[in-house]
Amino acid sequence: MSSRFIEALHDLDGVTLHPGGSSSIFKNLDNQYGIVLPQAHQMLLRESNGIEVYWGYFRLFGLETSEGVDVTKWNRHDCWKFAWKDRYTGHWCFGETAWGDQYAYALESLHGKQSPEVYVLSAFSMTPHLAAPSFTEFLEDEFIRCARTPYDATIERARRNLGPLEADNHDNDDWSHPATGDCLSIMEFIECMLANRRNDGLKSRPRYFRSQSAILVVLAMIGWVGSSRLIQAASQRKRAWY
Image 1: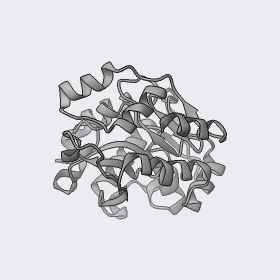
Image 2: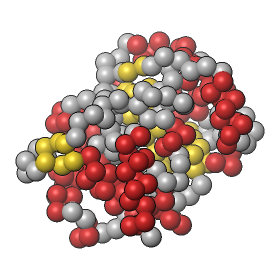
Image 3: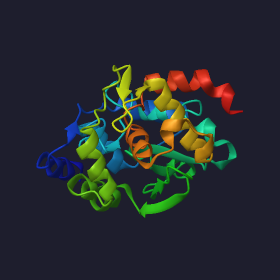
């Protein structure tokens, strides 16, 4: 299955593949967290430990990787989930869209279930919606479809305006807002991401987060800031959210 999927991605533009993971990463995941990924998911990560498609606007996280987002770090409570408090549902996120919608399994289904369902969690509410009855069907019907042509026209517009979102581009210290020219630092993007997670009203957010164009920019950068710098900054700001 995974070879056929990888071969299909090779024919598409805007796809980034990575070296495959070893068998030990799955054993470590089971030993440390009691999580067993479905065989189709394991096979895919053995061929490419993390994948970005459509120039980084859709991605599957890697496991024990320094290239892009590490899935175990991303699912730590102190990374971003703490901002949701009791609104967060018990899911294990393994990928995302540029808007911050999360691809996820129900956590309880990863303890031995052979073919857990795949959900999409809304970036604004964390409400789960069934995306596919299995990981294989998710790859074929959701992920590879978005790699070819996104179902959301705003993704296409964001890519035209912002360009590619690189999985390992975490070294730039500031970005310029295309509408206002304001210089937005990584820390400001992180704070906007956490504000989005907390689902507060727009009136309580920074001024550059109040226009539609600014919202698109900030949400599009969610995938870009999913890194060790995000985890560190989120930990430093944790107390402010309680």
